[in-house]
Image (cartoon, rainbow, N blue to C red; front, side, top):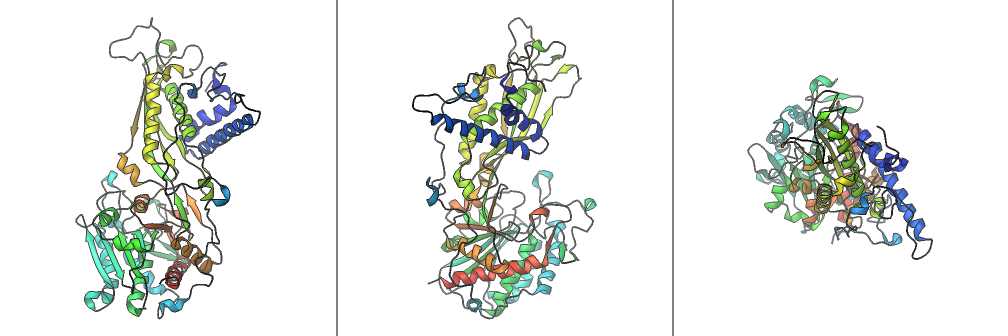
Length: 564
C-alpha cells in the first residue's frame, strides 16, 4: 500500500488506527483492535492537554478532529456526537471512589461457609458417580451436536433422559423431594427443570448448563470426541468443558440433595437448557421464561453455569456481525482514472466507519472497573473481492467483521449509529475520502464515458448478519457486584481455591442480558477450561470438577446463613 504525499494516511497514528485494522484485522484482528484503542487514547490525551492551555483556545490539530488542518477529516462532515443511550441500571457513577468494581475480596458473611446448613450432604463429590454420568452424556454427544447453519440439529431429549434416569429415584413421583418437569417446545429438544423445595419462597437457581454441544471433527482429534477418555486426571470428549461436564456436576448435586433431604430455607431451582450453541429462539431458556416456568427464580440469585476457568465471570460483551460491500467500476488497470477501485474504496470506507465508531463508543471507566481487557471495538475479520485478471480494476469488494460491544452501551444505539455512518458516506462524504495518488477516483470525472449499467460514483452497502433480535440475544451483560449472589460466589471460590480472580470477558453468551432485564439477579460461573472451549481434544479435569462441587455447596450454605 502506498500513501500519497497529501494523504492524511501518511500520519503514523492514522496508518496504525485505520489501515492496520483493515489489513491485519482480516487475519485475526486482535492487534488491530488494540492499535485503534491506542490511537483513541492518544487523541483523548491531546484533547485534555489542549483544554489546559486556557479558555478560548482550540484543541491541537488532529488528523481526525473537527479542527484539523488535514485535507480530509471525517469529523468535519459528521454531526456533533450525541449523548448515546446507556442502560441506566448498569451505568456507574462518575466519581471513581464511588464506582463499584470487581474485587477478589467480596464477602457475603464474615464467617466461612458452614456445611451444617446442608446436613448429610457429603462435602466431597462422588467421583465414580460423576464420571459415570459424564460418560453416558459424552456417549450421546454425537447426537447433541448443534449448528443450524450447517443443518445440524441436536436431540437434547437423549441427554435429558440420562439425567432423568439418575434423578428419578428421588423424584416426587417416586416419593422423593425433587420436583422434575421436562419442558419441550420442539420435538426432541428437551429442557429439564428440577426443584428442591425449601421452607421459604427465597431461591437460589442454577441455569444455563446446556445439553447441546458444538460439532466435532473426529479426524482432527487424537481421542474419540464421542466417548469419554480418562487420562492423567483429564476427561476428554466433546462437551466435557462446554457444557456436559456442568450437566453431570449439577446432576450429582441434585442427587445428593434428593438422597439426603437437608432442610433448606431456600428453594433450589435448576434448569438444564436446549438450543444454547445454535443461538436459537423459542427452544430453550427464552421459551421457558416466556412460559412463566422460571418466575420463582427472581426471588434469589441465578447462577448461569456456562463459563470457564473456575472463577466468577462478572461481565460479557455483545456480538454484532456485519459486512460492508463496496461497488465500483471495472476497467483496465492501466487507466485508473476511468475505473472505481472497490478495494481502495473498501479500505477507506472501513477506516471512516471505524473511526466514527471509536469516536461514539470510546472506552468507559466502568469497563476498567469490571476488568474487561478492552472496551468496545469494531474490526474486519474477512475480505473478499470479485475474481478477475490482475490487470483489471476490481468492481466489488466485501469486508466482513464484528463488533464486540461493551455491556454499558446499547445494541440498538450501536446498530443505528453504524447505519448512519454508511448513509453519510453515500449521501456526500464519499467525495471527501482520500484516494491513492492523483489518478485513483471514487467518483468519475464528467468526461469519462460509461455504460448505463455502470456506476459513476462508488457505492457502500451495509448488511448485518442476523436481525436485530439476534443482536439483542447476544447483548453483553454486567453482573451486579452488590448482590448477595455475587458476594456468595466470590467468597465460595476464595474459600475453595484459596484465592479468587474474578474477571470479565469480551466473549458473548446468548440471553444473559435479556434475562437480567427480565428481573433476574444473573451471575456467571463455570468450571471447565477456556483454552479448550469448542476446541480439538476438549477436556475438563476431575480436580476442577471436584472443587466446583464444593463451590456449589458453599454458595448454598452462605446464602442459607443470611436467609430469614
